[in-house]
Image 1 (cartoon, helix red, strand yellow):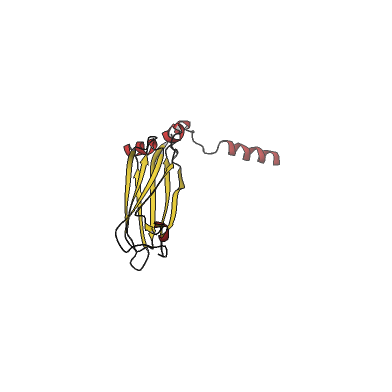
Image 2 (spheres, helix red, strand yellow):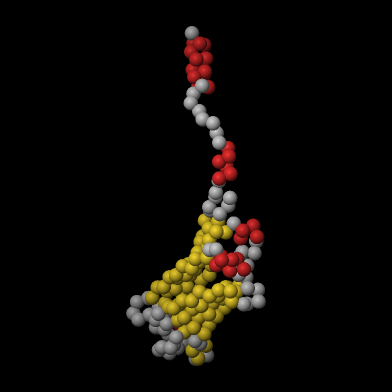
Amino acid sequence: MNKFLKIFILSILFISCSSDLDFNQVNDLKLEPVAVANLAAFDIKASQFVIGGVEQSLVGDVMNFDVFSDVDFSKNLSRVDLFFEFNNTISRAYNISFYLLDDNNTKLYTIPFFVPANTGSPVVISKTEIFENTKLDILIKTKKVGFVITMLPGTPLTDASVGNLKMRSSATIYFLAQ
């Protein structure tokens, strides 16, 4: 009797409800991973805008940025969001330009920022620039990035001036793998 019961239970398990599996669903599979990475940052003291007692109203730098040269990496990109945040505790306003450059330092794209002067409490400015479709193609061609910081007229800075101009930035990268 015990043997009959075991066979009966096993046979019920084998004839239980099931449905046909549709392995063609794998053709509709779409993976959309997202990655976040730090881009660049700086922290410039007010006194660093003064060299040899002379105020420097223009500061800049160019860095290599050959991130998207790998074809396998760039062909799966669907969108890139560049996030920038500026914190100004200096009593001067700034125009800041972020340039995307090719190998020959030709400007492909410019992201402008206006950072107001600190008038008692720190000024925080943030901006997100979205690259998709044709704008994404520009980003993929980028080989270098540059910053130009222009200090606008105001109270002269000295070696004893206080405050900082800080910038932090990041990239959120969206992929589409089919």
